[in-house]
Image (tube, rainbow, N blue to C red; front, side, top):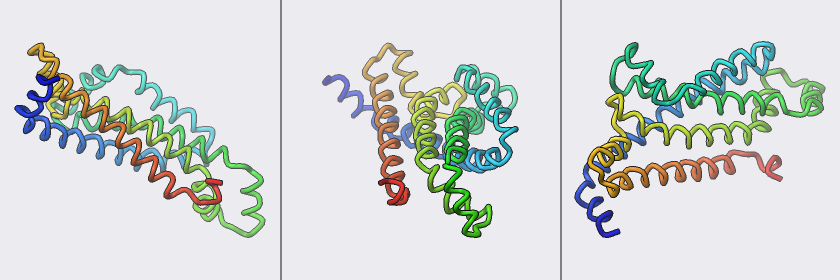
Length: 212
């Protein structure tokens, strides 16, 4: 244990720098994935015949091994942050897209009909009924995608994008288990932290009536 703490102290500059890179890649990838998946999920909930096509495409990408996807993108985008971001966004799409779509279509038709009977427009029904009621589904998808992304970011080091995977890889190359743990433990803590924060955010933005 003492060796582990000594490693953290002696390599703290490297660990902090790579942790910041890890946070940056994770946050940006999830933010972009949300901006793509939520509007697309709303769209396919209106065009249900196209839903399986779009969800199927994201599911196919999800089946590609992480390292292989990074490798496929290198000849196209080169080495660096852009390649890592594209791969991470692709991996984050499926949980958010599927949960957004499922949450919206699972809203009780009786509630929607009641809104229509009150003279609400399709836009008002979407914003005031469907999205609030589907919010728990959407947040569950975002939380899943976030935890997944934080873990996959460790592979960004193989395309020169940095992150805590660099610390882990250095530890593996030098047979230094303490350095491996110094990179792996912050990744796990980061995933738990993001999940906790998103859970709090979900509770805060969910209307009280839905909570009860």
